[in-house]
Length: 168
Image (cartoon, rainbow, N blue to C red; front, side, top):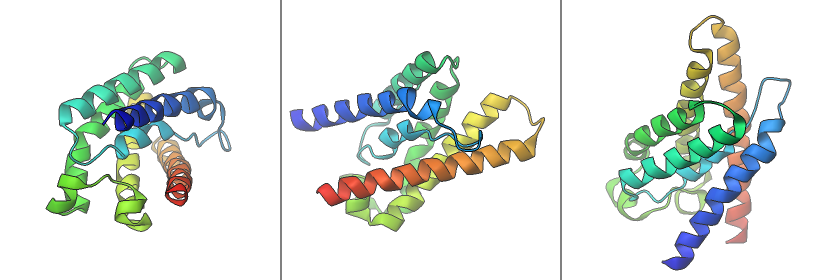
């Protein structure tokens, strides 16, 4: 139990540090930024209480907002993603898996996990960029950013999952 809490605490802190120190300063073609910090919410055990998911999502989004000087954008996007996490889990997993599994490539298989992760990444990115634009002044540019960031984030999630799976 203690080792699990320590592992999730380390993951939480590491993802925030990687996000604010590296990924926020790295863009592809000035368009795509990876938002890997949502990987934490994606990989929480399926039976995690919603209140805990919301609390962790709020803290994570708030910390990213503080370090990135984005007043509430990431917090709101992560909370929205956390709110839709359970319905997405129900969409992709059966009842037995929801009660006992951890949504990762090791338990679900890589492609099933990627479908689940892409769904949550798209939800997060659409909401984040809608908040950022606060209007649909340039919908083509917004769709390009959503697509590019989703692709970049999903690619990093795929890499992290491959590394974790190969270690185990």
